[in-house]
Image (cartoon, rainbow, N blue to C red; front, side, top):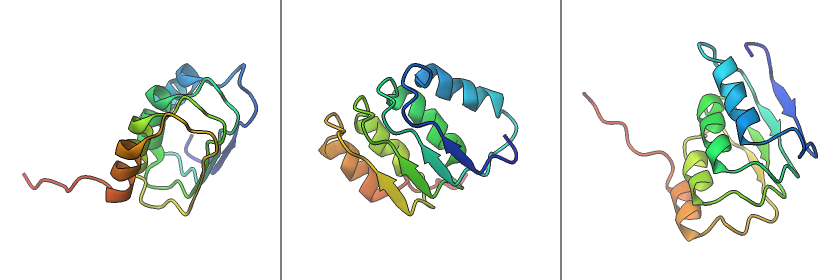
Length: 116
């Protein structure tokens, strides 16, 4: 995990699902992978349940994300994107469950930090 810059897993819908993404997050415990490019296109079994924690893990480094045809992504996906401040490009085709609430959350960005 410590050296992984690109993750291209498009069109592997038999293998890539929420559990696979959650497994990646668990495997990278204690490290922050320097992922810049993530291609998950046409993985129909990916939803916000797995992608949210995955994006939280790489939010500091991810620059390009392709989730085209990941048609289970909903408003929680927009909320997860809000924390990814380095994103330059997001490719999203056929995301019928991503609605106004998710897009608004993404546009607002991360919630303000609370000083303790």
